[in-house]
Length: 143
Image 1 (cartoon, helix red, strand yellow):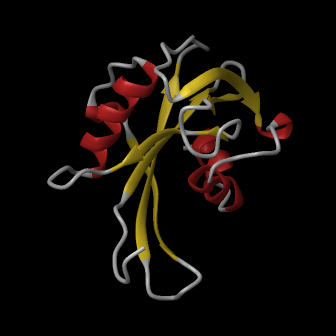
Image 2 (cartoon, one colour; image 1 turned 60 degrees about the horizontal axis):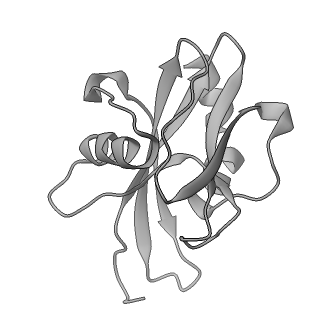
């Protein structure tokens, strides 16, 4: 990785208040961190705003058509990597779902599941681990 700035990312904490559960996808064998669970989202491309990037990612990964206004800003943090040189802006948004639904997954995911905060799986990708450690699931539920 070059010293400096890594590409920012944007992720959605999708929460169903009726059941108290969060939607996560299980990464397929076609992507890195295969078998890990994650929040839906990904890289912000050059020229994109985080909210626009997340709308695009949700369409690609989960077949969701979300209006940008439905994405409520949850938290932004800058992650510094071990080297101390590299940084990455990470943007998290919350989507409140009226009911649990089945996303239309692309090749990046092999499965999905709705989890309560107390029944989360044990293996996550980096951005999802950070969100959990920072308490963003609880924050999303009360948002």
